[in-house]
Amino acid sequence: MKVDRREIFKVIAFLGPLLLAIGYIRYSVRETMGTFNLSLLIAGGVLSLAAIIFNFGAIRKAAGGRSARMGANTTVMTVAVIAIVGFANFLGYRHHKRIDLTSDKLYTLSDQTRKIVSDLKKDVKVMLFDKDDQQNVGDQMKEYRNLSPRFTFERIDPQKNIEAAKQYKITQLGEIVVACGDRTERPKDTTEQSLVNAIIKVTRDGLKKIYFVEGHGEKKLSSTNEGDGYGVVDKMLKNENYDTKTINLVAANEVPQDCDVLVLAGPKQALFPQEASAIGKYLEKGGKAMLLIDPDTDPKIEDVLHAWGIELGSDTVVDVSGVGRFFQLGPGAPLARTYGSHPITKDFEGTMTFFPLCRSVSTAQGNGVTTTDLMKTSDESWAETDFSSGKVAYDEGKDKKGPITLGVAAGKPEGDKEARLVVIGDSDFAANQFAGVQRNGDLFMNSVNWLAQDEDLISIRPKNPTDRRVSMTEADQNQLFWVAIIFMPLATIGSGAYIWWRRR
Image (cartoon, rainbow, N blue to C red):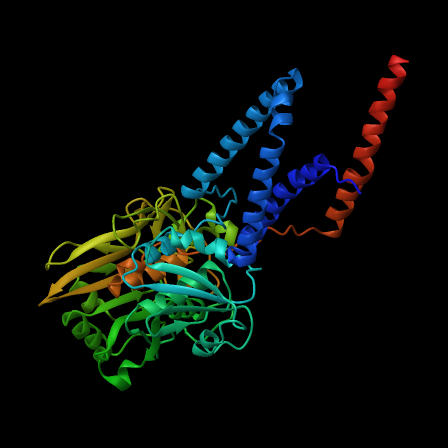
C-alpha cells in the first residue's frame, strides 16, 4: 500500500494547531500547566513546525498568487483588530473602572466601606469555602482589593483543603469567613453591609460601651416595632462593634466609668436632681453624651446645658415647605438641608434629614466651649411658641423666623481630656419608623461615632435598594388593561388601515 506523503503533511498541518488550541484551552480553564498540558503544547508546536517545513514549497508558491496577497491583507487587518481589542482589554484589566447607572448606586461601594478598607492597619482576609464561586464573590472582592493591599480574598474548596475547613470549623459549603489575626467573623451573606460590619468587628480592639438612660419614658432599645422604639439604631450600633446597655441613674447614682457615650433619648418625665448632677459630673470628667429632647417636655437638665452655653427652645419648629406631607406629618416635620462644618455632617450637603416634632436649639459662646450648629431648617419655617389658638401661623415679634437650628455639637477641654456633647431637639428622627429615611440614621450613628472618637467610622453607610413596587387599585388595573391592551393596539391597527386606504 503506497502512502501519500502529501496527505500525511495535511493531517500534520491540521493536528498541530489543534493540539496547541486544546493545550491553551485546558490551561485557561485549569489555570495550571501540568505535565499533560505541557506535552500537548510541545507536540502541537513540533507538528506545526514540521508542517511548515515540509510544505514550505507549496506555501511559497501559493504566496505569490493574487488571492494570497488579498488573504495576507485580510490577515494583517484581522491581526491588527485583534491586537487593538486585546490591548483595550489589557488596559481595562490593569485600570479597572466600572460605571454604576442604578439610581441607588447599588453596585458602588459606600463612603463608609471605602474609608474603612482603605485605612486598614491590619491584614484582613476574606475566605469563601466552596467548590466554585457561583455567588461571584471573587468579582465583588476586586473592588475591596483595589482599596488596600492589606485586603485579600481566597476561595477554598473545603473538600480538598480539609485542614483549613477544620481550622475555621466549616460545616457547609458557601460559608464566608472574615479573618484578622486570630479573630474571625462569619457574615450571614455577601452584602456590602454584612462584609463591612465583619471587617469592623475583626479589626477593632475591644467593644466601646454606649449607655442609654432609662426610667423616664425614653425610647426603648428592645422595641423593634415600627413605632417609637430604638431597635433599629440598637442593631446599627452593634453592627459597628458597639456594646449597648441601659442604665437607671437613680439606682446607679453615677455614670459608669466604662461608659464611652451616654445617650438620653426622649425622656417624657423630669430627671431627679441627682441624675442631672450625675450627667454633669460625667461631662466634667471628660465624658461624652448625646441629649435628644423632644418639644413639650422638661427633663430638668438646664444646669447641664447652661454649663455648655446651650439652650432648648420652649417651642415647636414648623415647616410649611410641604415635605411633611410625604410622611403624613404635616408642617410639624421640619426638613433640614443646611448643615454646619463638622465631622458629623461633613458629607451631608445635598441630602436631607427631617425631624417629626422638633424644638429649637440655640448656643452662646463662652466658658471655653466650642459649638457648631449641625443642621438648620429652611426659610419657610419658624419656631412656634403658642398653639393655644389652634391655628398655626407665624407671629412677628413672638415666633422666631427660620432658618432654625435643630441640633448642635460642642466640645470642651476637661484636664487632659475633651468632653463632647451633642444636643438635638428631637428623638423621633432616630426611631424605628424614621431611622432608615434619608440621612436620619446616619445623623444618629455619626453623632455616636464622633462622641466615641471613632471618626474613621463617620460616613455614608450602605443603603438598601429602594422599594419600587407599584401599588394599583382594581380601577387602576382595569384602566391600564383598556388603554394598553385594547385601545393602543386598536389605534395602531386603525391608523395603519387608514393610511392604506388613502394610498390604495
